[in-house]
Each structure stands twice: as C-alpha cells, then as structure tokens.
Image (cartoon, rainbow, N blue to C red):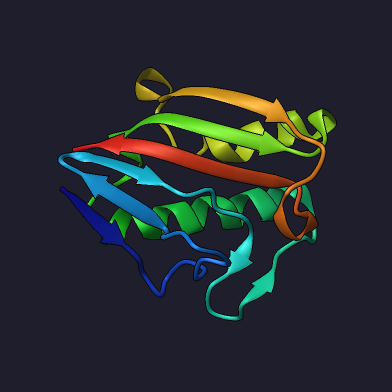
Length: 126
C-alpha cells in the first residue's frame, strides 16, 4: 500500500510523478530543484541560495508526511558542477546534526531539469 504525498508548499511536479510516496513507514521523495513554490520561479542567484531553496522544498515535503530531516536516512545529490560541492555541502549540512546525518551520495551529472545546478532526493523513515 502506498500513500501519495503532495503539498502546495513545495513545487508542483513537472511530469508524471508525485512529490513523495509513503510506503509503510518509509517516505521516498522525488528530486527537488530550486523552484520557489510561492512564486513558481527558479532560484538561481547563486549556488548557496539555490541549494537552500531545494532544502526548503524537501522540508515542506517531509512536513506534509509528518516528518523532519531527523527522519532522513538517505540522500542523493545530483550537481552539474563538482566545483560547487563545498558550497552545496555547507548549506545541505546546516539542515542535519552531524552525529545523525543520513547516508548520501553526490554525483556530477551532465544536465538537470530546467538547467538547474542541484537536485536532491531523500528517503526518510518514521
């Protein structure tokens, strides 16, 4: 059994998918990019602001499933330029307690949707 999770506090899906799916106690989020849900505009001013918007979007999806970043067990980060890794990591890391941070991989890719610089998805367990 699965429960679809969607919230108006995160960007609406731009394809045939949902923001997240809850299966049992496990939440699988779709990748989030830096679209501001209130204005429906991309936040591409700089990589730190872009990453922060992605994390705010993920926070909204987690909240819609009655979860927080403390429930996240795995993150996948896709970036268009590995030279941005340190700045992305700085913002991403501010959302987690180092002692309980989730498992993670970070991968450089050739291109991301809407030509953004970072996309992040998560798995969380309650």
